Length: 115
Image 1 (spheres, rainbow, N blue to C red):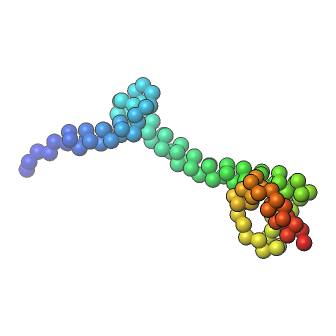
Image 2: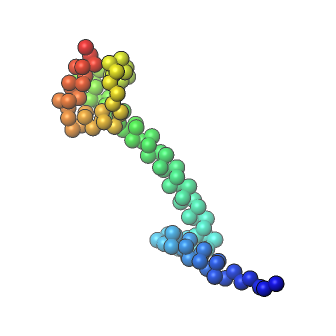
Image 3: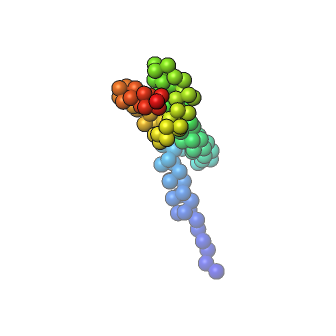
């Protein structure tokens, strides 16, 4: 049976990892074991961060809608309930955009749901 030397494969794998850890500090960028540990940790943080971003933006949208609704003497919860009763299907992101950039349109929406 012929002998298998794995230097090429290992080198390729290490090279790929070092490419991803470029810019990390000290040994974290050029010692394979340290680089691998750091990269796994960084990827985990990135994964969690992608989920947290969705929550953070939803909170931001709700805060903006609440602020705009209170200018029309409604709380966020009452406003969303009135939207639901009026069968207005518009997401929080769009409501937030309306509240910021089109306050007149948001006001007319409030009038619509108050009726």
